Image 1 (cartoon, rainbow, N blue to C red):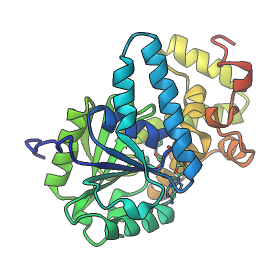
Image 2: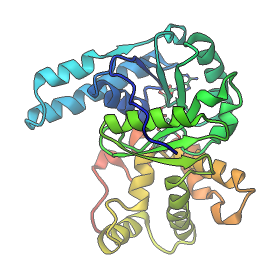
Image 3: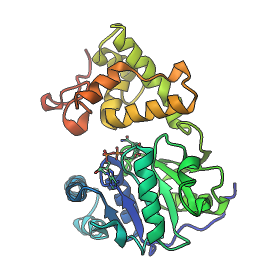
Image 4: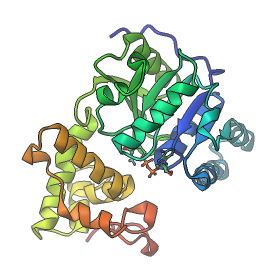
Amino acid sequence: MTDAAAALAATVPVAVIGAGTMGSGIALVAAKAGHPVLLHDANPQAIQRGIDGLRRDLDRLVDKGKISAAARDAQLGRITPMPSIDDIGPAGFVIEAIIEDFSVKRDLFRRVEAAVAPNAILSTNTSSLSVTALAAVIERPERFLGVHFFNPAPILPLVEIVSGHVTAPAVAATAFATCRAWGKTPVHCRSTPGFIVNRVARPFYGETLRLIAEGAATPATLDAILREAGGFRMGPCELMDLIGHDVNYAVTRTVWELLFQDPRYKPSLVQKELVDSGQLGRKTGRGFYDYAKGAPPPVP
Ligand code: NAI
């Protein structure tokens, strides 16, 4: 794979679809690099919520003296709410970060492809769905790829640049160069179940959930052990609460299915119960931990 391609010029509008945890963060990354950003969500309130969340984050940086008020205003000023997906025409780079559901993403990309220019790059932030299979739903699959940011997108540097079976190498190289120009650390990979990080991380979550189901240890104990003895920045339960159990459960199910139901990747009932009860983690105020009572305890 050649990485000689030029990054997209900062004048190229970037459309981010989905203004939740990931989409709002990705919008900020692109806006910070100077791009005009169109931010869309099926739920109009989510767009405002996403922008309000970014404003709070940037206000904190201003208060700490890390950025100027002018820089905050400039970054936010480049993000334009886009209530209708039909207004996506000017975008040269589309990054989708909606619900982790193949058929919902498929329907969206068909609409997007009909509205954007033929040379626009279309990408998904999916954690686990097949980029090859998603690419196949549009007319020109060679311009489609995965651009997988990590949570929180404005902070974590890694981005997996995921090529499907027919992604044009030039498209992957442009996405790679663009992410590098955005200050990220991109890495090329192929569309395999879970790509690199989520594949490696599945047993980290899976064995944790098995230990909880077997009553071996509490989430607080497991987190403290992995954080303090294992040297991880976050324990597995805190991390699952941050990711969102709905997202993490969907990813687990997809990786398990894509690997022909390999029992090593089998989803857990512990995870399913959290999802069914709406205890999705930080975003709902409760997951393994009750965030109304503050952050997880450091030591059990
Ligand atoms: P989220 O639940 O925070 O946000 C998803 C947003 O998509 C919601 O605001 C929802 O209203 C919107 N949406 C749903 N269907 C839509 C549609 N048809 N058109 C437009 N908007 C629609 O989800 P999150 O966590 O931001 O995840 C988004 C994507 O990013 C998923 O594919 C997920 O697998 C992936 N991802 C998530 C990570 C995480 O740690 N949460 C990390 C890396 C990738």
